Structure formats: structure tokens, C-alpha cells
Length: 361
Ligand SMILES: *Cc1c(COP(=O)(O)O)cnc(C)c1O
Image (cartoon, rainbow, N blue to C red; front, top):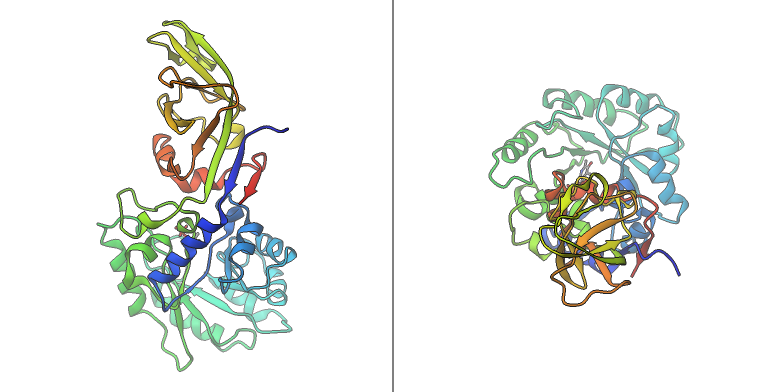
């Protein structure tokens, strides 16, 4: 007895996608990105499912990392934006969190900290994204400052992030890689490197380095708009499901829902499904957005409400209250819904609210 709206999370598909990322770059270590609640899938459960096969995890903040520690995750955890205040350095060192280092204040905070143990750092180079990281001509100095510090382990990782790796025709990725390789710091220490996000793992083998950082692909959707042979092997992890809770017949000329933005052109059967923008289904979804009812694509009609949507099921041979409805999942790509709404699958998955129970299978 409960509201039928839920996100079913297929942990076997998650592991399949991780293995795919690993197999595409067999000489890389694969660090799952579980920031933002594992892109909406539940960070603790996702990390637990991958813990036997993942060497480390990546998150956006120390709070996200501590949540994983408190829930039994023992691997190193990389803080992708590093610290936001200097008091985080010793907490990170105590907990075996790894720090991205993206600016001079972060370098200073690490060097000036009093630490019981050395901390592993990833030094970010801005090769063209122009959001975080040191400029290529500043990398040597930042590297020297860190590698001369007693606080820092000597296996520093040099890293960068791609702006356009999802665009297979763009020159930007090759340019970023070239820029990166040209400006690696000179040292006698072992240097390891990391470049690839999901798109680069799937389509840019030149970007496969010591460490790779898949996020979106782990959750089973393609970062590309067009078919791509590796991405096409991914398996969707989340199935966002609900059920029909009401049915009615309306006459041609009648409209449906708030603002009456859809009017029946024929006598129609309307199914009401108990899912809305309060559950993360986008209010921007236009009339005609596909909804699977009993496995058949039916068009969304009328505005998305907070807790409900309305669907034109006139062409369904059979429909009843209680029938299963899928908003996105293996048979209906979240990317397709996102594209209809002017966004990307990343956003729809990541902003799924806590109200939607995650059910693990
Ligand atoms: C989020 C993130 C990734 C993962 O990107 P995807 O496109 O989801 O694979 C990789 N690297 C960094 C630095 C990130 O912040």
C-alpha cells in the first residue's frame, strides 16, 4: 500500500556499465563519479554496489564524501572541486580523501596545513574549458610547490576536463589533449594523469590515461546525441515508474489540465498518472512527450502538475486504473525526454527529488 511512483535502480546494469568503461580502457583505473547523489541514483547504494570493483570514488564536496565514509565506503574519495575552506584539508587527510587542486589559495591551504598524514592531490590544468584549474604555463610552479611540501604524497595526478568531448566532430578535444601533453610538469617523480569523462572514455581513446572518471555513462545513458558503437552497449540503470490512477472520456473540444493548454481534437480517453514535477518529471514537457503505458508510447497531454500528469490513451486497446506507466527507463531513454524539454538527461536524473523512493534490484 503506497504511491506507485518510484525509481527502480538496476545495480546489475550499473555494474555492466562500469565493466564497459573499464574494458574500453584496460590500462586505466576507473573511478566512478557518484556526486549529486550518484546522479540521482543514491550515492551510498551505488558506491556499495561498485565498491568491490572500484578503486576510488569522485564527489563534489566533503559533505558528500563524509556521507559515503559514514556509510561504510572505505576507498579513497576524490573531491572534484577540492576544498572550499582551509579547515577541510586536515579533515580530508584524516579520511583519506583526495583533493583536486585548482587554484593558488588551495595550494597554500594544503602547504600550510598541519597534517597527521600526507594527502594525495590531483592538480588541475585548464586546457580549454576555462572554468577551473591552473593555466598551462602555471602548472610547473604549482606542481613544484605541492611536490616540495611534506604534506603532499609524491604521486601527484595531473588532470584536466573536456568541454566538448560529447561532440564527435569538434576539434576542441584534440586541442585540449595536445595542450595537456605539452604542459605536463617536468619531474623525476612518477606522474600519473587523468583526462577522460564518459564521452572521452567511449569515443576518444587518445584521452585514456592512468585514471578515468566516468559519471553519466555508468547510469546507462549516452552522452552523445547520435548513435555511437560503445555508447549503444550501455544499459539504463533507472526505470522511473508510476501508475494510472484515473480514467475518463472527454468530447472533442474539451481541454485538459491547468491553463487548458491542450484541447481534444476528437473524442478522447485521458489517463491520469500519479507523477508530476514534484517528483522530478519536468514541467517543461510539451504536449506529445512520450509516456509508456503498458509498454505502449502514448502522448502527454496538458500541463504537468505537481503530483500528476495526463496522457492521451485513446489509441490503447486496453487500459485500466493501476496500469504500469514508465516515464523513462530502458525502453524510453531519459535523453529523449530531456531533449523534448530542452535539457539533457544529466539534469533530469540528477534533480530527482527525495520524494521518489529508490528501489534497488
Ligand atoms: C562530473 C565529472 C566527471 C564525469 O563526467 P560525465 O560526463 O558524467 O562522465 C568527470 N570529471 C569531472 C572533473 C567531473 O566533475
